Length: 394
Image 1 (cartoon, helix red, strand yellow):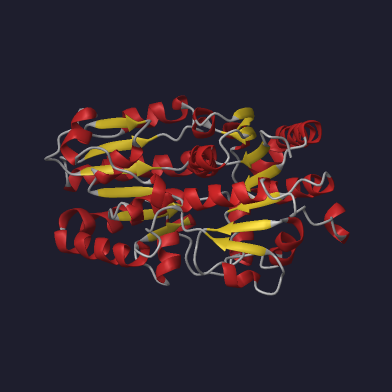
Image 2: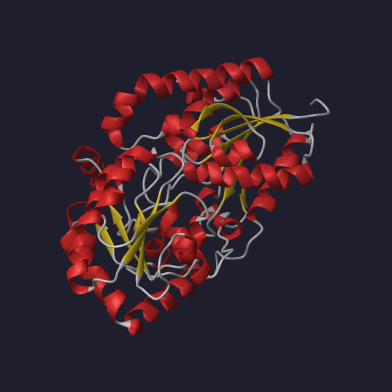
């Protein structure tokens, strides 16, 4: 290993970019001279990583979108393999996105590059057959939920539970009054935050539902105002027209999203990492998700859990309303939202139940623990990567 280690980091989604950015920042204490390069987004760019590709190039959802994007994704894949072959990094950190990153792990193993995988694939929800595959391909795995490490018992894989990085990342810097005033909104009026997702197809499927629901809601609550969050992976042009169609005052959140969410009375959020961020902020919410028909049909056959929203998965029941596929309609969203906006007791009860579910995750320090593991791996010459095995080359 050189005195200044080279570290390849690859993420394919906005959430991975966020976790990766905090990891690189924390690693300034543990491997201060490290040179980071790979695929990331604005957070990793700001943390000083050299971007070979940006995560916005990887923004796909569902089988049909993957097929259309295949030439682009293939080019990115081989660009990253080529960079790894040329630079021979001392470590590869692969964050989530198993469909892409587990494939990338194979050529990296053939190059004898140690692999640290950050965020276990959701093998507890579907594709349990991935457990032995992960164990063969990866040298060390960092899990973010306490129930995940036992899933790998008996595989021989080194597994660490580090806590959830969102506990470090969810921060509120302004009061409700200050946050809403910054967006030109009235703190005395009911406020709904709209988080339609970080992928183009998520926004295309959900944002029109949000807008139509808002129009209908105006009949019952004419004073409602709205905050629409735009993820860095989403072009402003994709949301601008629909933002203008929202009834009543509305503003676009393009930074400090946690301040806006914390200032809201209700959040409409796409299922995924964002819903857990809302939960850590203890805000009432309704979770929605809507994919293409083919993706939905496949998911119904392979997903083995009754809920999709993480707060409901952790709670083992529907802690918050969850509207999926054909139920992700303005009618259902309006019905789920009105009690939370008009009855303080209903909103308070949901908030208490959310708090009970996420309290165990909210311990902080995940990024620091991840950075310590990175340092262990790049500074330990006695721990070479395991040799590739059998069908990893297929």
